[in-house]
Image (cartoon, rainbow, N blue to C red; front, top):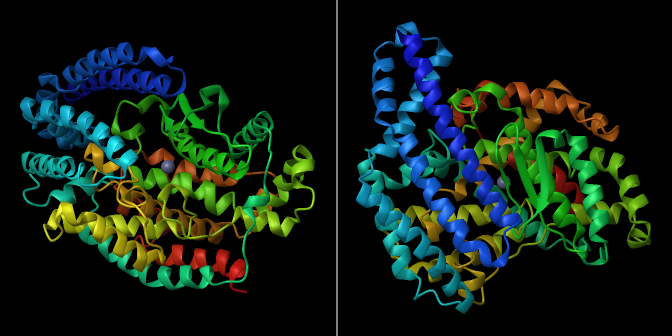
Length: 498
Ligand code: ZN
């Protein structure tokens, strides 16, 4: 009885997941290949597909099956219970929203994006403020529909990192902030200055060849994925077909290299999820924070390490002999680990990046608590920026208008980036405890031990455990910022403060 219901549920979920993967592919294609005048047709295709997806995901039969299975818990294994629990949660979140609300939200999202793009181009916050106020009102309503009452910000955080709340994030960020602000001050005042401006004229085709070699060495399976070029790098798709993108700048070779390694970390997680389970919770990523922990671990702890560069520097120099002539190994390593406060989050290094996130979290928290009015955001942003980073935006374009997220109502998304950084550092010290000579592996170009460990400890888990529980099970202790603080002090202290 339970088995038949489970099988029927599984086939319903499979259909919904296949439709989702088609939508992913169309969206990837839109960003990578779409001819300039084909946008309208693509929008029409996406609209039809979205409707079909919605119908499949909201099939009332799914509701009946999860209700039925919920009363037969004892007949289900732990894994089967996980599948049912998540199917029920996803179904409820999709069906509890009134259709009129869903329509209003979709229209507002598209309006929001255009309003943001215009306001940003004109650096004119007041014209954008009413849109933002409306976005806040909409997500508050959504939280009420879904049973979060007035805890709308908790709902927004939980959407990205299941189980996480604003209070948990606040406790983690407060501790991190206390250590990070003085560290960034000290590094800013250091006489040691990286010279990234000396890396010029790196031919794009050669960059592409180099980063393909690097990403394949890390373990990205090019038989089940691709790397292409888009305006903004991203990674989409799952399992058998993972699409990553990067962008190239002849005068900034480290940007495409590290953004590709970052996306590779996302891609390895997707490729490592249990293959025959992508349609259920057992074969899906648990959340944004854990996803970021994977991309950040490979990008930062691994690819900015000395061991990594002992292996790749000779290859890098062989390919770019002319461009790197006159740049010593130590200068190159410092450029790879450049720290310099900037106003723009996406340009930030891994030390100051966390302060950009803390700034956004603190403002979001106040917006949701009603202690900060939308029209006062630019002032609050600029003050926080000066306090945290020692820099003051000259315009709203460099300040509150720089990110796209809020224009689509994606509040509570930013904290995931920093949760990912904390988790990456915690995983890093844990694996070093298990394998103290890990960097010796890297120096031989061997990343397989680390990848295999992540495959089993993180990737194979799917959605069995929420972010916090996963961290605790894997590392033996609760998520804490102390590992990230230790890591940043060790790596950057030795370069800038020695
Ligand atoms: Zn990422």
